[in-house]
Image (cartoon, rainbow, N blue to C red; front, side, top):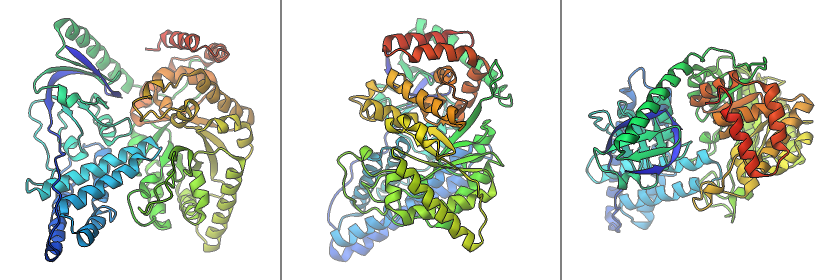
Length: 576
């Protein structure tokens, strides 16, 4: 018996037999084709691309009516990557100019694109590099003559599927799975998104689990703690069967809270919003009980393409999300990428540390024409419902002033065209760096609301990249310095009478709910799957009492005392 720890995705506890899926990756042949054979090699690549496209289209058409909305959206993302000129056309060009064989041309281009994503600071965007590799693997398998890799797997008997990686198409075909244990990925990977929507236990980021586990071994998979136990003995099995029964009962109870207003014991109303990545996810967020969208990432429109999305294309995407929320507010974050890799795929000036370079609002203000197109598209979408604009990675007052000036110009442009928009659309800023938290009082005088991005705030405060496994253990959301910065931003907003929300992973961590409530937070934005667990904590909390306890906690700079106080908060009745 041994255990492996990974990243918890949720879904409870499951006990079952392992089924290990073979990796899709394989050695790619590299050779030069004769000059006269280049067009034939391009034709071979095109045939493989068409093969995979047909498979994806067929799989999408055959999806059952009750399949999660995220499943169809993720298949569409893979189809978009397949059609992306930065992958297909660039590979063709390498065949023409370098005379590379189709396999090597495609694999090298896919690796380059994946590296560009992996160098981005945003965790969600980093994960998109894996999607590029998954699409390339399908094409490579078709080129090898073994068929496209998107054909559905045979689920067989219910099992816990163990894999190095798994693409959305394969995962959808395994709808009878008891759970998923994956070597790669994080909380924002498509594996995680689909597992949540399928409502099955999942743990990702397990490292080399697929190499350590054999088919048919007994596994315990705890999707709440990120623990997998291999070949458990009878004592451990009995303990986890009891935990599993309790977890299932708790999940059923949580479903009853779907339509219950989020209000604390002492009558404080709390707003629970959802984070989404694609326009199609808006309706699913609404169905999960979200009162609105607190963070809609706009990067999906810009990444992995040679050209920039036009105003109409962006407007249609934003409008789809707004209409999907049926009147509930949608907060759209402006483009949050860096300039170390330019959006058209060409190499930009490489930054030694992209996280500290020209990214997010810095990049947008350096490209005012591109930024203005996005501002006009968001303004136009505001004519269809309540839209709020969110500016990422603010650190300086002049960044707010320049953005507001460009927004005024965009409004004037639309008025000149006679196009409708909400003249009073709210504009907010993200608190993601210590400077912003320390300057929050200044920011709220010019902005309508604040949104605290705890993921980046923790990383910048502690100088830790949690994607770097050598220092990931030092990533601590409950470090006294981090808690003080969060509290400082919340207090600044409350003093100014401006709304403040938290949209990082901390908002969806039910063990942090009482802490944030005690700081005065009344708006949380998270993955839809976390909404009911957080709501349960809200319903069982007394903010007036929590404020006193959390206030004492924040006066301490001793991590041991802070941890002990947090443990006491969680151990109070209803904190389980």
